[in-house]
Image 1 (cartoon, rainbow, N blue to C red):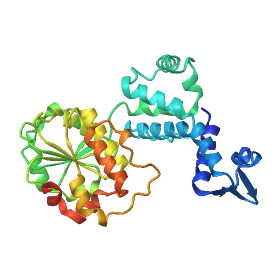
Image 2 (cartoon, rainbow, N blue to C red):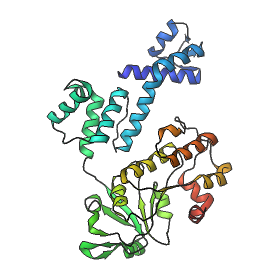
Image 3 (cartoon, one colour):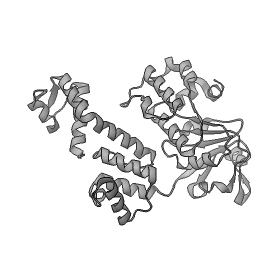
Image 4 (cartoon, rainbow, N blue to C red):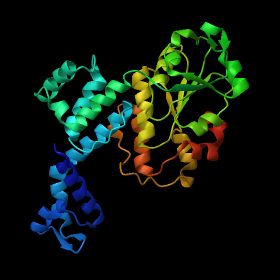
Length: 328
């Protein structure tokens, strides 16, 4: 799938949605077919039904593959824009998600390329696929830091340091990734409740009566997953995220990677209570229940699609307060 074909599909879909677009040679086939007209630097759609059929038959799967590949790239912590070869990019990303790669040697990449695309040098010759592999290689080792607030004794064993006391003194704890991944160095046995927060501002605002609060910044879930896996299995987990398609995807990603069943907030009871004060969802992608696998997430997505509103964490805190989120 060439970059030109993806560009064509995106441009034609935009023309179908808006009825007009700025001049580009990508619209020439439509003009020649009498489906659009050109006047100066303006393209005007003439036959929406015919273009709709073309987009449905030729472009829908291309754009869907681009969206799925972009979402998967973000979930894997890769900062790449899927601007070409969306189906091939999606296939490569799904393979990396499922099986990873033993190393980033030329031989390993060629073996992977032959397996997926029938040509040992295809990944290296396609710039986007090559960038995906390069970023995957760089991100194989977790970087960054883990931010947390401990509202119960949480001992860092090598120094016999209680992170609950550090939280009381400093407001939060920041642990560099190389130490944070060594979860066995932390005594988590007395943690009986854990909350993950998608955004920094709510993380800074929230004060719990018990347990542990972890910052899980967007799709960067790796460090949070280490800790969710290590916590006692009977420890309840709540994820406080933005109520939008990405917020639901992040929660499902945390669930699948950690193997832990949790609760997403705001839940439908919260959203019903405040929906008249929430903004209309105008995102490019709709709430789509079929995008998710967990029934409880599908239920939330269906509510979002039916009501066409979204809620950022900050809005929920403003309208309900943290105590309201916990109680309802």
